Amino acid sequence: MSTKLLIIDDDIDLCHLLSRFLSKNGYEVETAYSGNKGLTKYKADKYDAVIADYRLGDMDGVDLVRALRQYDDQAAILVITGYSEVKPAVEVIKLGAFDYISKPLIPEEVLSILNRIVNRPERDPDDAPTTGRTAVTDDGEDCYIGKSLPTLQLYRQVEVVAATRYSVILYGESGTGKEVIARSIHRRSQRASGPFVALDCGTLSRELAGSELFGHIKGSFTGAIQDKEGHFELANGGTLFLDEIGNLSPEIQAALLRVIQERKFKRIGSNKELLTDVRIIVASNEDLRQACQNGKFREDLYHRLNEFSIDLPPLRERREDIRPLADFFLQKCCEENEKTVDGFNEEVYELFQNYAWPGNLRELKNMIRRAILLTPERATVDRTVLPHEIRETEPEVAGEQGATTDLLKKAAGRAEYQTIMSVLQKVNFNKKKAAEVLNIDRKTLYNKLKPYE
Image (cartoon, rainbow, N blue to C red; front, side, top):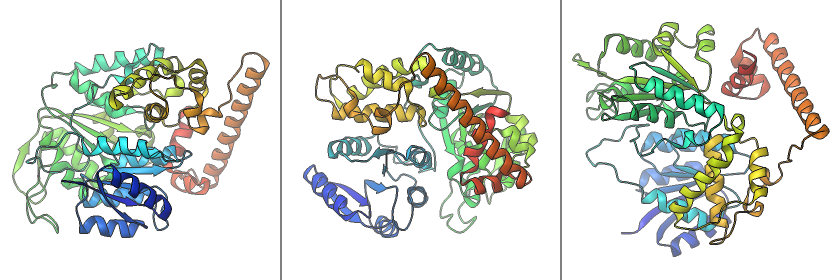
């Protein structure tokens, strides 16, 4: 039986090129030249995977991935992005896309990722699809590669809190491995034999959040065509990981607080109380203490969850670990592609050290995966196979030039801070309005303000 693939891209030439190549490699390919036409086709037929450009004429990748996942929460989506779109790529991954791939496209790279998508382990057919639910498949150790002080502190905190029953809040930028750390805590805990269930609260609508958390019974609302277990039931006896918890509505926050306090809940539409025994780990890109002060997050819920907190360091703050992490991902990606590559040359290591890594661990891993595909068998990875933004990174040399670079960075940081504060003052410190004026999202604004407390 052939594997059905849908390509959604407004670049007709690219669609034809990919379609011909993938058809020759065993895929049954159909194309759509807009997001809306792609959604219509997906709903009318069954596809094993979707390749979609992030920038379409009628919608962007975030809207498309969200729509596909709302219709089919098991949709396997590969998103095409530009080199400068690391943050949007990370966002679509968080929404449920399987992976992203940067332009210019290399057909063999697309084929390699597609093969991983369609050959991923099958779910139990009796296991009803649940938005954001994941199974433990990762060993969780890739966050611990290296011996920098931030890594050793992270490792120690995980070891300490894993042995307790504490609820945990994980703070960190996108790509720093918050879910991996949550899995590590679970695996080291007394609940390791129980389930680990993850839910991305950032993908939930106000209407569906209650159903996803607590379940519902048939007929309780329009679209409830059968009984459904919520994540608290699925995670019973184990760990429930709630990513981007700050996105939950006040009503759902109140319901979540009651469940944590009483350890029992009701499915939507049911009068029967169900007992629950779960450990809760949550994650957030923004400071929940600040969210409480702004009235966005319940203070009583925050204190229930904040029995222990861990700050995950971005990759740029643990540069000692970049080399061992790169070697680790190189080995993993070579095994994944059944290919032998003779390491990196020293120039590549130097470029890695001087790059900012806005996408953190995920960006590093995906970059290495691409580099391996472009490197001949048994050759050394060199700068020619790296993305242009890494190739063009200027090394920070010692002495006067390095001191000048530091001064420029500090000056730029001060100017940015002064601009943000000026805008905040003009809008009476309304962060939502400030973000709109600055043309950035609120998460980015919070992250920029965090170093200044």
